[in-house]
Image (cartoon, rainbow, N blue to C red; front, side, top):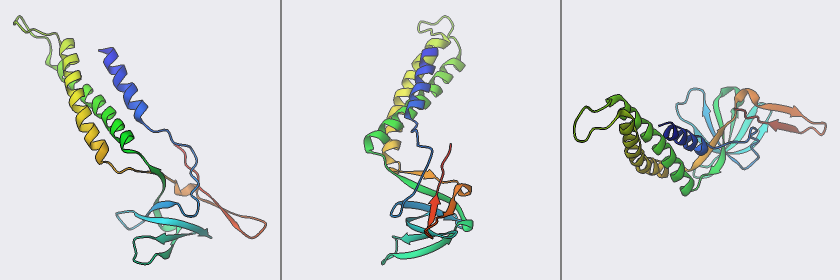
Length: 181
């Protein structure tokens, strides 16, 4: 039983991506911006930062147009971290599915208790192993399908309080973005 729990935890932790601590979007990178009053985020191409305003290029329009968005009106800013390949998404989904399914199956097995005096009598621990393996196998299938159906693009959130603007001696502005977890 302890081995099953350790394997499930190890699989779920191994599937979690480890991100770098700093995000520095450069001109031309994809950003996802949610403005304070909107309930959805829109995807743009980051062009530059002028003062306290982001200059973004809207790619959804028939002809790309520049949009200026003040930083104070943004409720969420994310930078694209690239696309995760199908195999990685399927493996991550399978790992989460196995871990979740095994946990549910083991819990059901333990909760059902020991059988008494019948021909097919199992202890609660044996039921937990059987349930963990069975539900874990079903979880692998479901998790793989969900992983493949998930959005392949990964996004990293930029905390808005970490946007810094620093003037240089040449009259240019240096824009810095920090990301910490």
